[in-house]
Image (tube, one colour):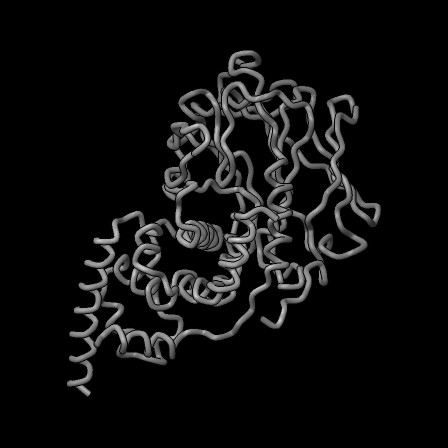
Length: 158
Length: 252
């Protein structure tokens, strides 16, 4: 087994669950998210996808998984021309948070999901989204402020 | 702190069902490597065997030939599919707007599986969701064959939903059709679609019927035939999994 294969297996062992849960917000189900994560790690392991030698492994696999998820949507729905809007799978379990998340723009929401479901570091999010770490920090700061406002407003209203 | 609160709320929402299987990943990777090796279809040179044709689909020696520049533009989703990709190895510019469909396998509820090709500015071409090939790629008279379990597959390998697709191609100019044979003795002819310059290669796409997803009825070989019935190449068909093909996930 080469070193990249060992790294991939170690990443899989530690991050499979968080990848799947973050991706489920895109695919809409745990089963399809699992399939996309499995396929992404397989493509990475098979060497089907080019990786920059200095690139972040987690971000690279995430990008493959995200693309697989989009392919699934395209194959499955044949209509999904637009980027998906990530959503909580079971919004009824925390309706206030679900409503607050829905008020975020989709890209900001995705970064929140990467952070809190995917356990991605700022550097990993930056690599996964092709932005700088500063942009990630600013985006999350904005998202935190908006979520705090929304959640506080919900709390007052209740 | 909002971050602490979000951590707690997301943790409460996270699905803790732990269903990883590295063995399945490894099995899929092996299948992907086979798939990647499948289409050294290549093209001799762009001009060597180009044919002057007057319509988008014309019979030439019993073959269907399609030209990139004689049909309507692809749908937006296909443009976006190609547009989002970069051919890293060659840094080729893909002429996405000229992408053309070379075949389609109908799926349930309009879940069609199609094969799209797009020419590159340097005279090569790219396949939708696949590799790109340069204008001077090696000519290959063999049959390229890939298997795609494009629908849902259970963790143990049982195929739950279609389509199961055989796809591939050749640049053998004598090839006119294919014959698929099954374990139960049945056989099925499959047409080849020839694509004109700059591709100059033939492609096929075939949806394996559900009755042939079971042991005892699986596809065995795919044979490439000439117009006069000569067997030009035969490939074994592997990769259609059945119940028990993948090891069960471990406890972790």
